[in-house]
Image (cartoon, rainbow, N blue to C red; front, top):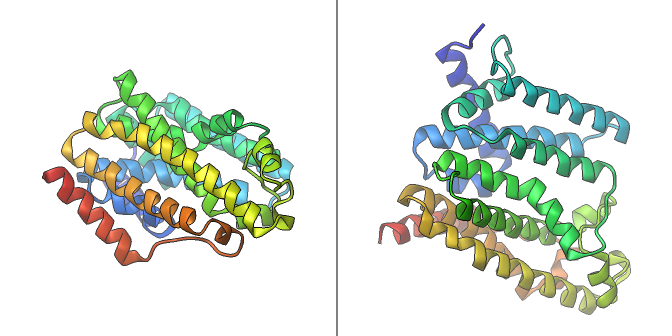
Length: 288
């Protein structure tokens, strides 16, 4: 049975609630979009949140992999008859968004690929290996957003959206070094940790951690600088969304770079008023 308009509207509200409460940085940007596009991106994020929660949950590795396989099967539903006969709100909203905007299902599958790497305890010897992971878990979000913006057909735009996704994921990795290390996850490339004398992050001196983090922050800035070329290819509302999200992440990255050793003692974040100010500034800048 095809979901009713009321069912679809309720499903989107659930997804927007998830996004607003679990992804404040993300929500400050997408709230600048028209309603249909904002709802569609919320559906994408809600699915990503479901996948991430599996990776961060309490199941053993085998149970997590089984749950991720179930998420892959949910995507196969989208390839077929949409959400007909299904009542899960995330699936209902995602199916509607896919029908409206032609979401690339393979990008959603890449999200699952990335979390499977987390569950398997994958580590990264080189930066190039880490970039592949970043493209899976964040570059894929960029490609999905681009489909909703309406610019997915341009190869240049897809590449730049992918670059911005990598930049934001690198920022997340630096922000969450302490938390990830406590859960046995180390994303920073092994070759870089050896170079700066930080093979074991919790045992490395603050000065060495600072140099390592500052080096990786410089890399993230390069990806931002390149990826922000996307803004010139978007309409004004989509551009303001991108500038708001990247502005928040770049501000976090700047704080990390100013006090790099602090990532081992606390999680760097921005207060809500500053996020709102950055979003407003991005909108004003695009209008100008």
